[in-house]
Amino acid sequence: MSSVGKGAATASIGKILQGRGFKVSAIKIDPYINVDAGTMNPIEHGETFVTNDGTECDQDVGNYERFLNIDLSTDNYMTTGRVYQAVIQKERNLEFDGRCVEVVPDIPNEVISRIEKVAKKDKADFVMIEIGGTVGEYQNLLFLEAARMMKLKNPGRVLFALVTYLPTIKIIGEMKTKPSQTSARLLNEAGIQPDFILGRASVPLDEPRKRKISVFCNLDPKDVISAPDVDSIYEIPFNFEKDGLGDRILKKLKLRSKTKDLKEWNSLVNTIKREKPTVKIGIVGKYFESGGFSITDSYISVIEAVKHAAWANNKTPEIHWLSAQKFETGDKEELKQLKEYDGIIVPGGFGTRGTEGKIKAIEYCRKNKIPFLGLCLGLQLAVIEFSRNVCGIKDATSREFDSKAKNPVIDLMEEQKELMEKKNYGGTMRLGAWDCDIKKGTIASKAYKTEKISERHRHRYEVNNRYRDLIVSKGLTVAGINTKKDLVEIIELKGHPFFVAVQFHPELKSRPLFPHPLFKEFIKVASK
Image 1 (cartoon, rainbow, N blue to C red):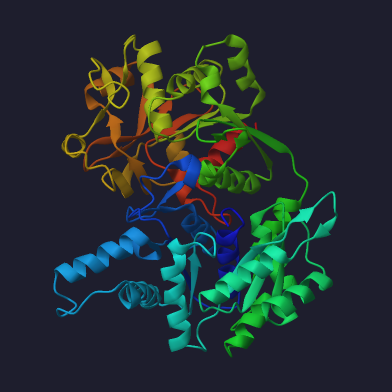
Image 2 (spheres, helix red, strand yellow):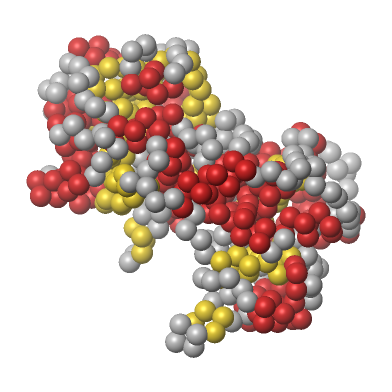
């Protein structure tokens, strides 16, 4: 089921195999009709992750990149919409030689061909494939059919791991295996027998539970792997290894370890667990409230980037969620709360909701010398705030918020205007890796230690160059520019300990063993 930990499990198994000396790649399959994740609601679906080549995909692709320290591409992401679109296009191009095109086997065959393409392109020994959704739903059935067909064709080269949930009802005090039994039976109905069951639970599985799952789900007790809750997802590979998962996988595939080295990863986990001073970071956002629940998946890469940077600075991150809408009234007591934090982040987003609250928070950080990091929309709002309150352009705004704005200090590029007029929204933003030249002597140059960088983007609106000279003359530094299109990429404020905002999403490139330099510098300053 959703959020049970399939993505973290997939990434963790990949890490184990990587530690054994194998080259690993990964694919996420989303059973949605959507062609990509770009048009999905972040509260419902979680963060939209973006690859270097500009693919808007599921947040689990971010998990794979962070765990495996690899850059993935459009080939590593699949949706029902994308697969059907490809098959229909082939039919239109007469690539089926006039025969009837059928759901089975043509859709599963397209899935298989895409998996094989990734294996070849990435020169992978192992391809980890995560099929999203819940077993028993009809929408992922065709992907399970593809998996069944792959196993039939290559019985010694394909393994299945089923992630199941074992609830422990407190009032009864017993861990229940029935959902896992039902799950395995539904998978059997799709023609698949799991080779492993990863038992997600609040605590480790005991031997009686493992034996019961073994008997009812038709597999060796040694292949029932305990997957209890952990404080950090980066511990999961070691939890799996407690049950010998790596050895079991290689035994089934008749392979030998080339090496057995997760020393750096082990050192990371020890650093995470070690008692350290705390750094308190507030994130001013709007995509984490769902009814009475607080859901943080919308900002998962930002969270992880903060963690990576904190650990690198020998700090324990303490992250707090601050609703942007609470600051919209400009209530001084509400805004004073920002002083409780060592640093404030304003992340990306779309639409007008909460923007005025974010602007108020940015103004407070600017005036009170609170370390501030703005990401994408965070940069745009910082420019609006500075234009209004320092440059005297009281009606400064973004074209996104007011299509008839007199002073759109944030505006659309010409090519984006054409796309918007045609209502061509999907996959048409400024996406993926874009180059940026950094100005010497800036905080950004100090952080990056280089003058040329490449960062991932996902936005449609830019700083309006008609206002650039004015805002620079009033004290805002343009610290980074994309010279090809003459676009503002980084801004900073002189005389402030850390007031930096970027048009891109640095969080997407942060890795636990290689924290992003901008986040690392932000946490370093915030810690002081």
